[in-house]
Image (tube, rainbow, N blue to C red):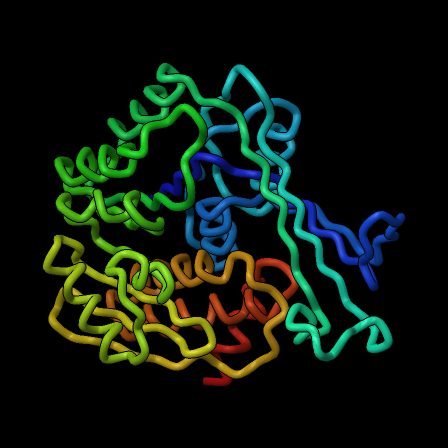
Length: 317
């Protein structure tokens, strides 16, 4: 079983408008509500690919009820801890298409006609008792399981929680995938996570260096291996990804060509695709290929990719 942990999930309210303007009434041209959060996205794509998984984390209030309802519709099993106070957050994703007459071509902020703006809420405060309820669930896991932890932590939770979870899993020989930024990721390395997935910007932040080539990506990926990570998957957006694997090999793959419509969830889709490919084949090259196609399919969609969209890219490779 794959378990995904999302400490601060959300309902993502995605709205599109034409020629958005402040201090005026704007009418939407489309609107959708999706269950959101990095681990939630991984669960959604795993379910699309037919991989059984259970979504863990915290939900609260009426929005938490709706999030769990929508996630179950997508095929995931849920086992959330219910927080007594507050509500699961609602994040607003505003997409605006500007007509040519409203674009000031000399202004840097309008170098493209489609603009995406996000407003992310804070979410509920999780108590120590509620956190312990989540950690207690780990006692039922075994070495056949995989745990994916990703995204930011809720208010009230220590920044050490990622390291605590990876340590607990390491002691039980459970594979852990970590997709987080900065110290959340760094502090897990000594406990040897199975896979970490920084993107290029996060890799630069970790090492306080600008990275200009794939050779440099490989170099710093190996540095993270030296710190304890077994496999390092670095997503490079339109340039694909690099996997520095525990077998000593380095795998590089370009992304498929297509029009990028959406930046939300592409990295999470890559994680899900990689895990699905790895479980099905135990082959890093095939896992990377499915990961890149899943991530690209989401980038080429207005929401998370469907299996049909992912398979289409796989067949075109």
